[in-house]
Length: 119
Image 1: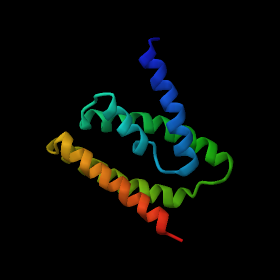
Image 2: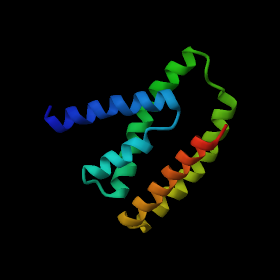
Image 3: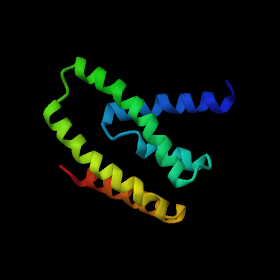
Image 4: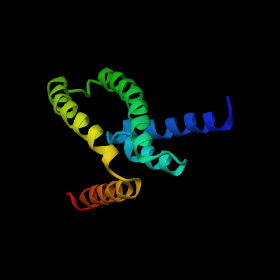
């Protein structure tokens, strides 16, 4: 395995640790990493989702063992998420990389502000 492969595995460890701890999904860390590595926005998002799927299954197993899963609401959120994911995936190719980066940045800043001011 080359250095890039090892760096991706190490990045996966860090992202999955933060995601499993915070529940924020790895995309908020993984997408910027992939953009930094030169991926297009579309390829970064798609690649991130594959990694997140693997990370999420692993985290679900661990949280299930700790009885931290509400399956009813998780399922309902997932059903809504299927619809949103299909729409988002079809809209993303219409957005330039530059606009995507701005939208992503504003989303992260908004989330950060919300978390800072929420009591």
